[in-house]
Structure formats: structure tokens, C-alpha cells
Length: 330
Image (cartoon, rainbow, N blue to C red; front, side, top):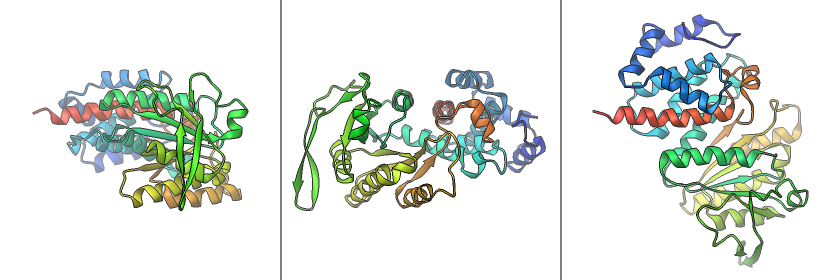
């Protein structure tokens, strides 16, 4: 039998495997091998992304890979969703990871990052936690290598965030921006980042109002918007991205939006700000991402197979390309 979460029942996984018409776990492994996907190589991909990943994470990814191979998809974006679905089968039933669908959000993030024809990721938050932009830069770089198209990263935060120094790192390109009022809307009239080189680090824009934030996203033509979802997001990230998404889709441009939970613990359902935040997310977001900042131990505590959120997203992307390549072979 495959390794499972320490609180899970192995017979439950056995039932899932048999319902998908595999006689045994060995049949699952043999099926992956028949497409040229070696389990040892898969394990190496996993431990490159997260050296602390456990056995349950490996078996969950093997299972997801088998599901993706079974539908014979040539599209890495589709394969990523199926791999994540398999990993989600190994989440503990009734746990926060299961109820909040951690695997689904991480898989959809991986799928969008691998999609060709999208170029600019905007990270929007009133307060940007230390290391958060670096984390998304890392995953965007991997996605760029896999899909063969570069992701540009834009960071949009409050002006007082810059003054406090949380976005003051020299690893970012800081911009001076001016706005002008047009009939009915605000737009960017000048930005010092407009002629930045192709290898530019993440570009940081300050904004004082929702209208300024929308103008910046429109100026940068962001087509993947990541709202840092925490109580303050009700006043900044959610209304900015919500307004931008409605405006952009109304004009026929491609845009995807995600709400990214940046809290160490699950949301407090009794907190009014969190409830309003959840309501606003439902109005604009294509998906929600939970657990991206958690390490393998914290993810396991939440009921997920023992792998960090970032490690899961990265491994899903790598395996999705392996699956697509394997299915394309005659």
C-alpha cells in the first residue's frame, strides 16, 4: 500500500485507487512506468522542490501523475490540474486542507503559470510580507523555463508600506508614477519603469487609492492578479483587483485572478473582515490559493500530505510537463 497521512486510513486510498480501475498500487506505478515516467526520477523532482517532503506527498504525486496520464493530455496546464487532484485525494478528509481544497488551488496556480500567452503577474497587497515576492519570483522563474515565455512581476502596495521599508529592498525596481484624470477614469501618465530591461527584477508600484491601483494594473496590462487575502485586503487588494478584472474582461482582454491566503492559520469565520473578504473574493477570483507559505510540517498539520505549498506547486508544474511530453510520444 502507498504511504498516507499519519492520521488517514490506508483502506480509503485503496478504495479510491480501485474506483479508478487500478487493481493495486503496483498497477498505478507500472502504469506510470509504461509512459516512461520513472518513480525514482519523480521522487528526485519532489525533493529538489522540497527536501523535507514526506512519503505521503510522493505517493500523492505519483497518483496524480497516473490520473493525468490516464486522460492522455498533451497540455501541461490540464495535466497540472489532474496531478493536483490526485495529490488532493491524499489530503485528510475533514481537515482544513481538504475543506479549503489546498490541492485544487495549488494546481490551478500551477496551471495558470504554465499557460502561454500570459506575461505579467501582479502581486497586490496593502502589506507585503517579507519574502513573499521572492517566493513568487522563484515559482514564476521555474514556470518561465518550463513554458519558454518569461513572466514579468509587478508589486502593487500602499505608499505607507514603502515608507515602512517592507518593500524597500534593493532587489526590487522602485518606480515613480504620475496619474492624470481622463473623462470617467484615472490613468498612468508617467512611470519610470516603462523602459525597464527584460531582465528587470520585480517592479514595485505605490498606490494611495483603489483608482490608482486599477490604473497601475491597466498600465502594466497585468493578466494574472494575485490578491494577498487578509483582513486589510477588503480595503485594498480585493477592490483593486475586482474593479480591474471587471474592466478588463469587459474589454475582452485575458485576465485571471487569485486570492492568496497569507495567514499561518486558517481564516477566523467569526471575524467580520474575514467574512467580507470571502464575499469579495467570490465576486472576482477565479480560484483561491491556500497553504502556499506553509512548510511541510505545517501543511501536514493542516491535513495535507507532507510537502510545502511552494514545493507542491513547483513539483506539479515539473510533472505536468513530463506528463504532456510522455503523452505526445508515439
